[in-house]
Length: 234
Image (cartoon, rainbow, N blue to C red; front, side, top):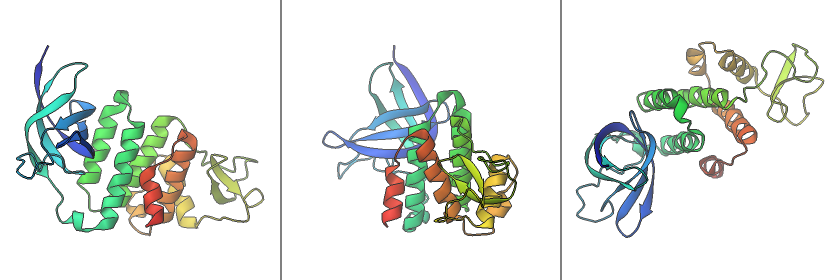
């Protein structure tokens, strides 16, 4: 049975498919995370040239047929973020969060994933919103760290955050090779205690915090994020 559908959502990734077509990971408001084909996307004269733009918001119209490849019939580009595309850091950040969403997406929590992506795409503080999204994804994965005290002895005098032990460590149990800044520790405590730390995250360079969260997610979800490896090598 064919069902004509229309959905607004986000293009998370694109891959060449056959000679001129494009395969898209699409996070739709109604459809969830699905794969669609944009026909003729790579043709020089294609009228679909704006519908496969990664990290854009689109409206797709397509015929849905269960267990069949879904092809986009028509659609509109709603938001391209043209100015932000000049920023290589933004492209790397978007590549990272889109890969994380694709790898961890759970249909039973679709509203959370969609709302987080919508906030990221609509925010000027992209990295802050990505950090909030990764924190929520870690929580949904059921692998939240212990941020109450040292996970090895219960001491409340915290010195660092351990990815391997899954939480805070005191000075006695911390490795000599690494010590997190007070700002990172305060942020981790607030994030996983479900406090409103958005303003605090916007007050300092959160790159070390992002690194801890990504490595924690990789370790406890048993995955390697290609986009993160790319960011480390740039």
